[in-house]
Length: 289
Image 1 (tube, helix red, strand yellow):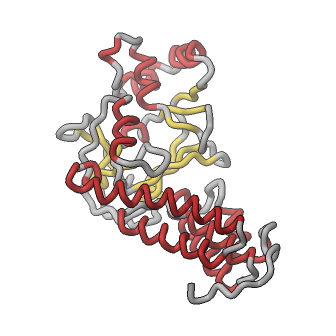
Image 2 (cartoon, one colour; image 1 turned 90 degrees about the horizontal axis):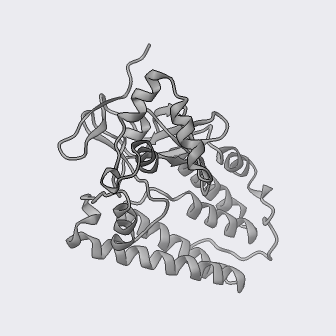
Image 3 (cartoon, rainbow, N blue to C red; image 1 turned 60 degrees about the vertical axis):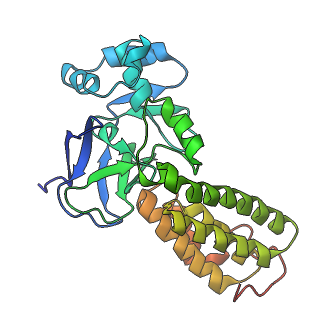
């Protein structure tokens, strides 16, 4: 049996956390874990009943998790669920609490990404950077790019003040400016596609990716996919293949080869003409953009 890549131990200022026991390479699956408790967003009574139905051992695990809402006078099990539940998939109204993964602390500049895998019915955590032995393993619990003020508003609900480098007031101005510019570029890209101006559209995709690199943002799959779709739509199939490959690799880093979206991107990598939009616009040479 191989030794786990992590250990759970106390941190100086954030309760317990997950730490690397050895060097972890980018793209490695750090952990995949079945839920300790399934959560419904529609019935807290059902959730509390599910806690009561846990085995003695699992109940002990559950009540050892952090409760960020203890000062509100709510029941302990309610507070733990509200603090630790993760959605089971993007935009899902259903969630889950985990014995181990729920110990991973937040950072706006994480070194792992977590995602629900509907095939395995598990939460998977993948390294998005090389992680040196002894380093704390950190994920982002924010679902999208946000400015410092927007992030802190969400994190305040969990009584958490992030002290990562991009939350430092001195560093946040450049980061926030990039986030706002990315929002503008995303909107302009869509407008250019609608108005049949693919050269400008692909230019905005390149600018977005450059800004993401500048601020250290790891979530790039959707932007590579945007680029692929533009190239495929305008019959630039060699470039479409390159961008389908980039999309596939970004997806692999974020959710693994057994992830929900990996098969779709793999099919496009193997057949760049396979997208429903491929070839729907007259050819425009998008090389050298």
